[in-house]
Amino acid sequence: MDYRYALAADAQVMADLFAANHHDALTEQERAQQGFVQGALDVDTLRSMAEDRSLLVADDEGRLAGLLGLASPESMPSPPPPVQAMLDAQDSLRWRGQTLRSTPWLLYGPLVVAAAYRGKGVARGLFTAAREAASVRADVMVAFIELANQASWKVHVDGFGMTPLGEFTLGDRTYGVVGGSTTP
Image (cartoon, rainbow, N blue to C red; front, side, top):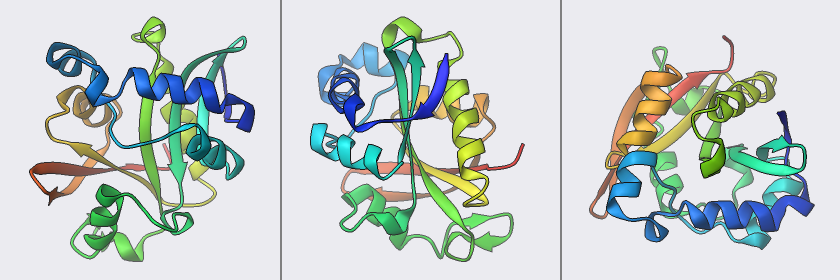
């Protein structure tokens, strides 16, 4: 498996993978078992993110096995509502005794693994690649996970050891914010 930055040419395959794992495309049972992604990442957005080097992919000899966003919060001119809510909460979120606002950090996520590759270490490989890529730019990778998405919580907190930093609510949804060190 090759873990690399996404290319603009990967945009359509990434959009298809994202759409196949979107909350609205899955049954309640599928969401509970495998987790889900939300938001709107279309081909143009993903192409732009690839050009900005804000996406990593797992490439299995030309087949896209997974993707992971890793972006500087400053690089988002108009962040989606959950990202904006997290940015607004930076003073109440703490990483190792300091506010998130005073800590160099990168936005981690979404993480999506193709169905054929689940349980084969792809998510961990992407997490490790993200940690390596982030280590020269930040102290912590920060993600928000809707608390209803227990599968994602288990992967990131129980599996990868990410640390809960706090919560925020947006509309009728509550999100947990987690952080992972960029150094092992």
